[in-house]
Image 1 (cartoon, rainbow, N blue to C red):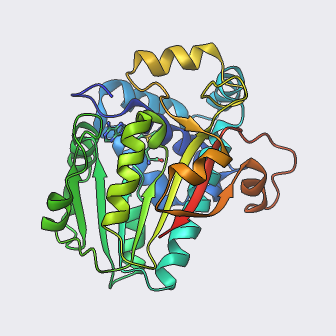
Image 2: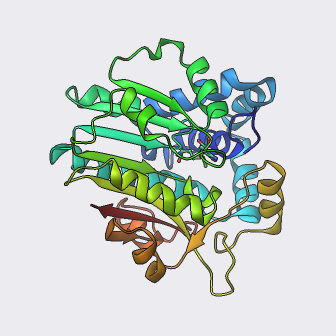
Length: 293
Ligand SMILES: C[S@@+](CC[C@H](N)C(=O)[O-])C[C@H]1O[C@@H](n2cnc3c(N)ncnc32)[C@H](O)[C@@H]1O
C-alpha cells in the first residue's frame, strides 16, 4: 500500500457497492445504511471520488460500469456483495453462539462493525487497518465515538501485529473472538500471513473463529481472479496493492495451523446464498475460509 494514501482497493469496493445499491435489480444486496456509509467515504475522500460518486449514481452510467466490469474482472461487483453477505452471516452466527469480541483486520470502509455493534450490545468490536486507510475512515465518520468500537492502526507489511497494543486497547484473549480478514491477506507476503495466523491464534480462546478470504492459486501458479485482465494487474501494481499471496485449498490446511479449516466457500456456494441471480456471472478466484481454534 502507498504509505500516506487510503487503500485504493477499499475505495473501489465502496464505489462498487454504492453502484450496486443504486441499481434496482441488485439494490437489495447492499443495505441502505451500508450504501450511505460507503458514499460518505467517497464524498469525503477527494474531489475525484466526490465526482465519481455523482457519476455512479446516474442511470446512464450503468451500462458503462457493466462494460468496464466485463473488460476487467467480470462478475466482480456481485462477488463483493455476496462475499460480504456470506461473511456477515458467519459473524452473526458466531455472535449468536456466544462470541463476545469481533476484530475486523483490514476493515477498509466496510460498515460491518458499525452495523453489528447496534444489534449486539454486549459485544466489543475492533478495527485493525493500515493507518492511512483508518485515518480516512475516522475523518469521514467524525461521530464514531462509539464506546464499544476500538481502532488500532498498523502497517502489517512493516511490523507484526503488536499483541500488547491490542490487549491495551481492551481486548481480552480469554474471551471467544471472531476474527475477520476480508480482502486483506492477498496483499501480504506468505511469511506475514503465516505469522499473522499464529499471532491471532495466540490471542484466541477456545470457541474462537476466523473468517478470511484468500486467492486460490491457479494451476500456472498465478494469483488473480479467473478472468482478470492485464489492465487490473497493472492498476493494482500502480496503486501499490499487487496480489502477493495465494494458495490452494489443500495447502491452506497446513498454512493456517494452528487454526482448523471448517469450510471453504467458492463462487458456487456464494450463488446459493442469494436467490434470483439466474446465470449472472460471479467472479471466480477469491474464496472465503471459516476456521476455528
Ligand atoms: C481490498 S481492501 C478490503 C477492505 C474491506 N475488508 C472490504 O472487504 O471491504 C484491503 C484492505 O487491506 C488493508 N491493507 C492492505 N495492506 C495492508 C497492510 N500492509 N497493513 C494493514 N492493512 C492493509 C487496506 O488498508 C484495506 O483496508
